[in-house]
Each structure stands twice: as structure tokens, then as C-alpha cells.
Length: 165
Image (cartoon, rainbow, N blue to C red):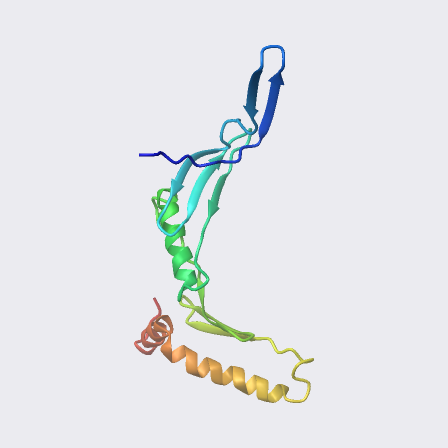
């Protein structure tokens, strides 16, 4: 059985000594790794600690362009790579939460105050004559999106019961 050898290109310096017909090769990049404490996860994500005087924690996250939910893929990798970094005490949650962010419109819900804030952006160079229709479109977008938001429905039901939590 004949064993096949695989050819690999390697950068380096070769020295031939004609006095004794010897050849010496020294490969480049034979330095120690700059990545320490390397952690990998399913999906292609990677985390490592850099070397040097001020080490940093580095992350690479990877997702396929054909994935139906790229955000979920990246989030799962991030959670897997940072599970050891999570605080022991729960972090204080923000007072307000964005419940709509679409087409220049944002809606923020403040659960403690029981308030909702809308902000809308209209590009007047795109809509110089039909800006009123654009405002109406954004209002209709809020009316369609909010009833589908579970957090919004909980706050509204708490307000109807006489308290906000």
C-alpha cells in the first residue's frame, strides 16, 4: 500500500551550505500564540484572552447568511461564551422598555410610571407632500403592534386593576 503525502506550503528561510551539501530551513511565525484561555461553542463562536501588558477578552460570533434567524444564532453563541461572566446578583432592569422599533417609529413603555412614549421620525425630503399620510401610517403601526406585545398587555391589565408593577 502506497502512502500519499500531502504537500503543505510553509513560509520561511532556507539556507544551503555548499561546503558540506547541507540544507537548513527555518519556518517563520514560530512565535507563541497570542490567544489564551480559548473557548469555542457550537455554531462557530469563539472567545479568547489576548496576551500582552493589558489583556483583553475577545469574541467572534458566526452565523450563516442563509439562516432563518441570524440574531438567534448569534445570541445563542454569545450566551454560551459568556455564561461564566454573568453577575451573581440580578442586574437592575431599566425603567422603560422599547416595545416597538420599526420604520422610524419607536414606542417606549415605562412600567413603574405606567406611561408610554412615542417617538417618530419622518424624512421630509422623502415625504414633502404626504407627511400627514406618513404620520397616520406610523400611528396605525403602533395600533397594530402594541396589542401583539405581551409586556404591553401586562402593563395595561395592571393599570386596569388599579396598580402598576
